[in-house]
Image (cartoon, rainbow, N blue to C red; front, side):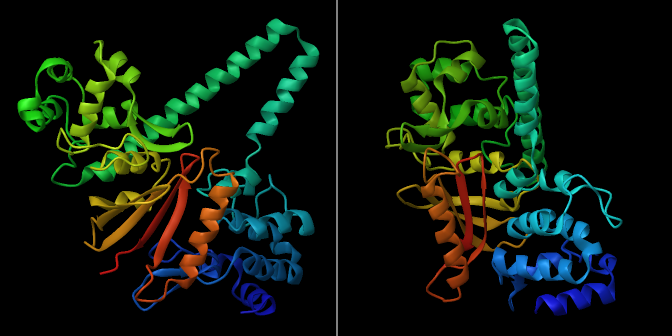
Length: 387
């Protein structure tokens, strides 16, 4: 397909025809990048620059389509095309089109892709301008009041995001039968499950802790007690925080006791080594990753954890099954650098993933079905499971 042929197609069929979704919720613009193989799996067919060339060709052929093209570029995370439509063809960030009442900024700010959100999201810029103006007009007291307001707004956003993640996690991951253990267990039931797992080890400080957990459910632990981040330069994608456990239970919890609890929650027998960094085995870190991905509907929630397959320098690979089709796949969760997704190491990991996605047509190379980021530092890859 050439820019001229795409322009002729859109002009002849009309934009509304190309905005119609198929049964899977994808319209024609989705397939500028992806193609389906004989098994129905989607693979990347064009890079962002090639897509930008096609879309810009349409804008050059009919300038009246610029705004709807910018809306669709924002909706499908075509960053190069979005930027060129704005810079070269006068695309307006805050204007709707006659075919879509939303503005490109409204669409782009909700994108799952970080680069797209950065292009369209002006919240940081707006806040900074407001703060600079207040500094000129008010004294230090007024400045502190403004900063406190921003802090309250950030906290409200954090609480809203936390609630959204938990709601989507319940509706998707925890909606299967039987319940996902232990994260789908209600209070009381979770306590009994932990006591059974502890067995003869349920004594001393561990018994005191488990006895205090009668009103604690599995999702609360995953959402509130488990942290993600870096211990220095070592990646950590699932670690119980002693201080949070103590605050919730109102008891004196020692780190060694919290480690034992983490072993139980990871379905890892007590007495065996449990790695305190990277991705802890037993499912705790995997399901924490799923929870973090639930900022909006995520394909990761379609998968059920089976077991850990292996350990790499930056993460771990997990064997999973699709809870609808039963297909076995591998999900790799990586944290390449403590500086997060804007670091050179993270960008390199993304480039390598894109390259493998293009080359994965061999029976000896795992095919990458999808990949993305969440939490500002975690890269996930959904790949085929080789025999």
